[in-house]
Length: 154
Length: 154
Image (tube, rainbow over all chains, first blue to last red; front, top):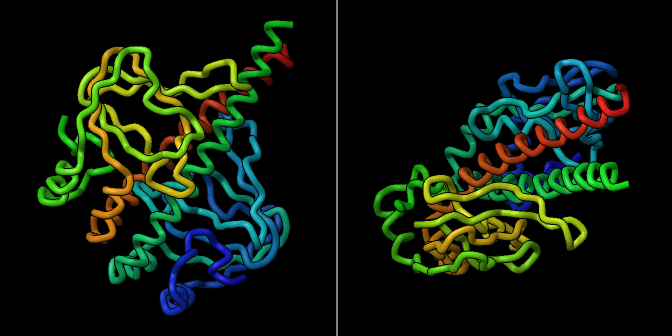
């Protein structure tokens, strides 16, 4: 997978992408294993090179709600690592044996400290994506709300 | 209200804040009036100096769902103006006669183009806030989900 396939890195120059590629580490994760858990300190961002990873959130520590499935062509995981308080906001479990590219937050932070244009581009991409996700999630709230209204009305 | 009261401008230097203050325009809005509507092109960000403004979203163009109430000490409005596709993601209506500080997106964009550190700080603040809002909104989805589970179970 190319780094550019991740929304975070859209708009970066070839040399900026090379510097990020140089700090990625390949990691194999077996089917059923957790890559990270919700509310844990977020130390890495991950790109998926092969396989499939499910993002879920827990309700009352018991029931899992699926949020999305990440495949090699649709995004990255662990973006909680990029902003304070640097906690994973969801849990990630491998649906298949997977190959990820791990980027240590501290190393990416170092690159961004040395290159404010890279920092600005990544943060702008992140803000844009978070606003999109927020709108999608509000849409889910609306659907639940309408179901509630209908169940009371009929 | 001081600009620093808005999360977007946290961490900016006094001279950066002065440059932003210089492009703000005071605007009176009467109780009941709409400051902007969901999905319209977002041309300005607003800070509330006095009054109260309600953020709502419409379901099926008919039912309003309240999202939050903005008061002079808790945030800003219209942050959809800061990222592509620059649309307001909610509608904003004055609950009381209000005084806002309007910041034209095009003027703020100009300041950020001239000062990449300002740009980077504002985008980092925005990304952090959007991730917080996303987590809060997922929490609402969880509550609806659990109500649904309970209504099926009992």
